[in-house]
Length: 308
Image (cartoon, rainbow, N blue to C red; front, side, top):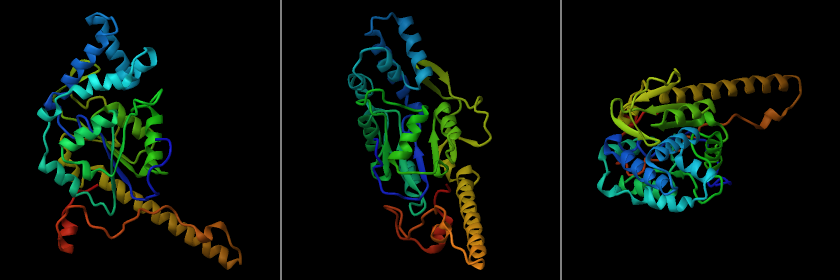
């Protein structure tokens, strides 16, 4: 994943996390995963308490328990993935959702690209997307490559930088990010990603780093981060994503106006400059139709869809 895998595209990208974002924490997948990871820590020769403590410490320190295991122990990360993620009976735990698929269908692909950004390995990520019937709705996937020595993961800055490189994005402000993990959302925001949304199913139980917790949003003290309890709330024009898109348009228009004034001033003085043939990056809006979308009238196109 060291080289861009796509051609330059100036459309903003909506990045979706996968686990506990595209499906609800009520599925109890995090609990099932926690049990499997705990069992793996026990294979290191630790007792129950020591395994739980180390599991939580690695998760808290690195954002992924496996990250700590690969740094401090001689383990095979692919074997870990096979015994943990790979052994989950996902087909019995999550199912396609017509409303979720429609949410993706309603994203205006003439204005936005849609990618997935996950700490899971590729096989697990693709498996989840297939079960949820979303494979064809994802333009690109950035995952943790467990096969790479010293792989990185969210919330490490290098992982987000790698994502931008793979998606061939030069301006992080053109990235909109939805994730259930507070640390991941805050890290993206600190790196200048345009709008970051915390998917927070208040009151539900989850497991992080082997520890049970009740999901809440109490310690995300950042006015620029939006919290939603249901992905359908992304349709709400009050959600900051639509404001971000409009702000980008205003900035670009202001840049174009300044460059136009400069060109005119230089021209009046009989001078030329490197501005003569350049313009700021523009959000491309080609005339394309949403995939799988039925033909609609112009009026319907304006009134429906997801506001990003």
